[in-house]
Image (cartoon, rainbow, N blue to C red; front, side, top):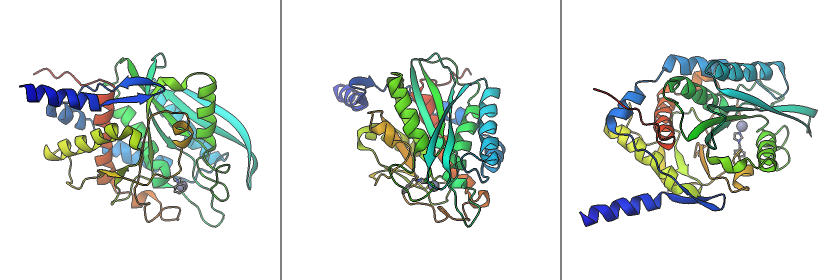
Length: 324
Ligand code: 1BN
Ligand code: ZN
């Protein structure tokens, strides 16, 4: 008995972490297998596919197609009764000159004091010589987030910590990737929220990028949130063991990864706890004309989607109560 108690104490202690100069206690309500099965049953693959197809179009910042995708995302979440705001700003960029950007900020319950923030970028990189529709980079992450809001619409009841989505604009460089020419939206948003004293309300930021290839794996890129990344690894193992996943190939791997520049950097620099779910190896089609919806591997994104869904429900302490 003493041994069991020690194990439980050590386990929960390992889940404590420091963020924003204070101890934050990660106290998940761990899901049991019945709850996981129930939540897995909420999948809607047709909706996921439809949403990827809708977003995987050329959407270079400040173009009509880009506005159309933005309106689609905004309307989708407004229809689900989320509170949606735009963070609009103008900057001078290479090639295009003065350019107006729009970050999309959506909160399920804007009155919450704490948020689990999921993020991705919705712009597509400009290429002079071909049409780039950027399915994995990052139409799939955007679609996964929208699909999650839809799948969980009846589950996201009031909780102390609520869900927030940010769809960043201008992640891509217009010319050569550099500190100045990249991450326009996330740099602006992180600075704005810092000025307004709101950054402390972000309990954790999970950034999704480059998802959709069949061979995707995620590694533990950020050591300060290893405990939380480890929960993704455990959840995938539990789902797999229970036969809830179609494949037994582990996507979440608890080995250190080499992190790369992305929209999480402005937040890391301001001490926001971050998990970066980006393909450990860039998809073969990365930044080519082959990054199209037809090359997206749906069984793989379904697996990522299920693990992320369980993580979110645990983090929000929203384990469903199942009556017999
Ligand atoms: C991700 C998707 N990125 C660009 N499109 C960021 C990145 C920058 C990834 C440099 C690798 C290298
Ligand atoms: Zn890119």
